[in-house]
Length: 148
Image 1: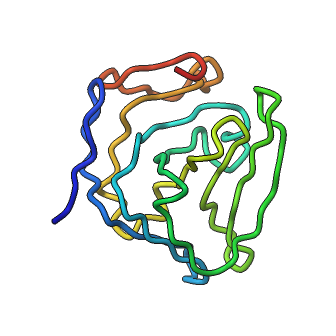
Image 2: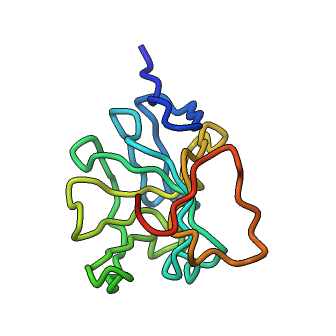
């Protein structure tokens, strides 16, 4: 029986577990056995460098993930000074996962990799202090200037 993600302050996630996804070419696939911990839009400058004004994704426990294929990784120092490791497909370039030193037990997955991306509903916006002035923030969810 599918498990619904819990709703948080204004959030309305329809994501059920298990759920799956992968890169555009199919070289990398994943299955997550439990519903996400959170879903969000990140407006930090590092996420903006990934090709969009913000990155939308969801947070899952690493222990709930099964990944097939070998993503390529790139590690950078985040605004916090901690290491952030981003994974992507070396064949098609699809951005996939992000992990950080601050919370190694969880990872972020880009919503665009979902087999059913229409299930994604952000629960909050983070790093809005870096948001581009022309980005329209939803008033239906909480906004945080940095991390909550």
